[in-house]
Amino acid sequence: MKHLGIFIFDGVEVLDFAGPFEVFSVASQLSNYQTLKVFTFGADESMIRTVNGLQVLPDYGLKNLPNCDFLVIPGGVGSLKVIQQPPVLDLLKSRIAQTVWTMSVCSGARILGKLGLLDDRPFCTHHSTFESMKDVSPSGIPKPELRFVQSSDRIYTAAGISAGIDLSLYLVEQTFGLDLARQTADWMEYLPYLNQP
Image (cartoon, rainbow, N blue to C red; front, top):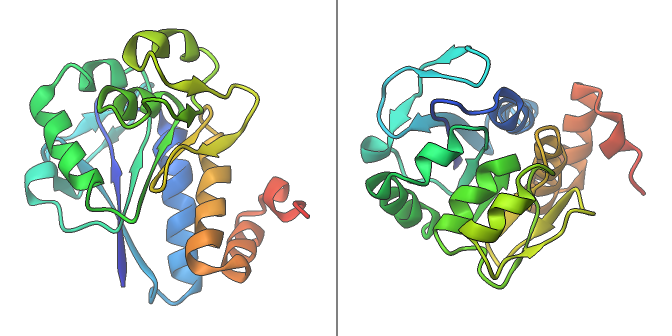
């Protein structure tokens, strides 16, 4: 059983984390919960409020987070505050270092950039975030024409919001196989992935 943690924080964009949560949870469900346990975590275990006011209670805080094979780092306006919190960043970086892979969605790339994980590497983010990424990761290589990109051996970045679903399905395919990825997309009625060659 593999473990996948999704970081949530005040000001997180809902679909940034809920899209991947749905993909990986459905993949787990379709495999009879034998492949993957999916959960959320925050800086601590306090309730968070998303960009548009949805309240979500994380399953864990960073200090009591179980070992994770995979991490999802979503974006949203709250990512600007996250990158100003060195203790949170330090804990995130140590967790990322232990993963098989970590993916960001949207302006979650700011967090990876602040950690130096996008230096001299290609990355995707929300179209409105590329300009500010010049300050966060000056040597990062923006790829605004792509939906997602593998930024390094273990780091993947997706463009804005719904692109996180595409990258999540791709990583289901890479990690657990094409059949499970297609079954997941079919269950979700997510046609863009099903129509890929």
